[in-house]
Amino acid sequence: MKLRERSTEELAFTALTGVWGSVGSLVLIFLILVAQFWVALFPIGEKPSAYSFFEVWLCLPVVVVFYIGYMIWKKDYTVYIKTRDLDIDTGRGMFDLDFMREIIADEKAYISSKPLYYRLFKLWC
Image (tube, rainbow, N blue to C red; front, side, top):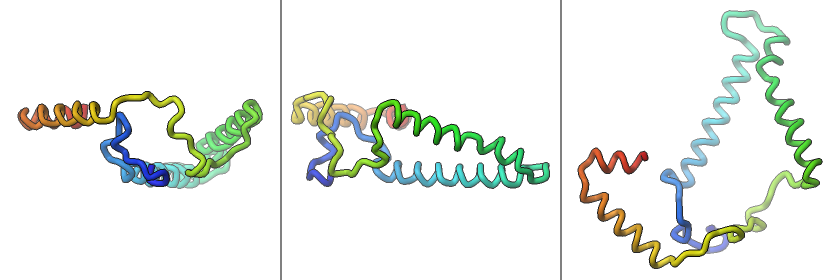
């Protein structure tokens, strides 16, 4: 959106955590993979062995095989799409932006008039 100089207000839905939620998720996934690799290399309560390592890390070759199979099946050999080449408008529902802003402002005013437990409920649900 920034590359095309457009605002996220044009979107009907935006994530509560924004871009930082994506960054945090990526860090968390990386830490989980590191922990899984460590436990595969040095299993808890067992001696390190190649059998236990490959038993835990069997997911890696399976994912690689399925990804390559997808690329062959769809004949789509693109590994990475540059940001400037992304199509952000195809399949997007058209709506009146001013009307949508009005609805969101009314909803925020309604929620702010409610008690704290209701606002917390609406925040998470």
